[in-house]
Length: 242
Image (cartoon, rainbow, N blue to C red; front, side, top):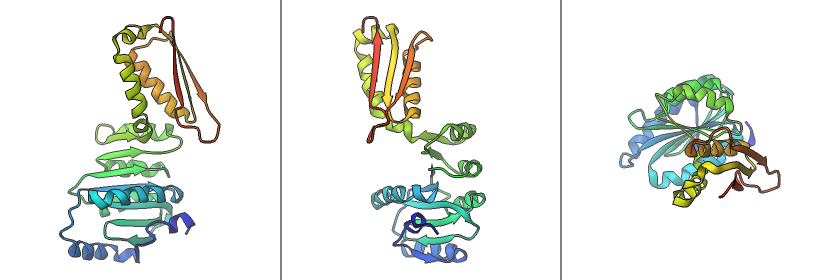
């Protein structure tokens, strides 16, 4: 087991995989007064799960969610750690991911799958079990291509898009000004500087669609390689009279 996998739910009790269902029944009987509202499943390589687990632990203190952490590996009977509200499956082979989610989620409540990477063949099965699929990967192109097939059955979110909320609000407020809005069609070049080309493309696409630009508007995406650079650092609009 990798050091990253070992860091998942270090406070949890280690239980045999075959005893997991009975363990969850005992926990449920002991905590009947605890109201749960959803299941949040995090799937990815072991290195990408501890920070997600920490964030969900804070949410669980007030939000009442069951957290399922699945680190990708090659095991059919993985090491299991359990706390009152969280379950970690360490090194589970991708072909078993959908079965694990189906068995461990609270079936009467919403299920959110937070996809942080891994074998894309496993994405299909778990997406069908999710009420919302949250995508959070370094290179999203192929993940987006596969996830789009589920858009009619599952709500899709990409955290890159969520992280652009403030930028989108800022530009929306700018173009709410009547004088600026009247000159939107005169924009000839959009320049975006930042560390994440995918975020820059998302933002450029949103702005182009919102302002109904034609092909006459040039878009220049410049990658910032300096240490500490943000996904988006600056947005510059160049126009005839703006």
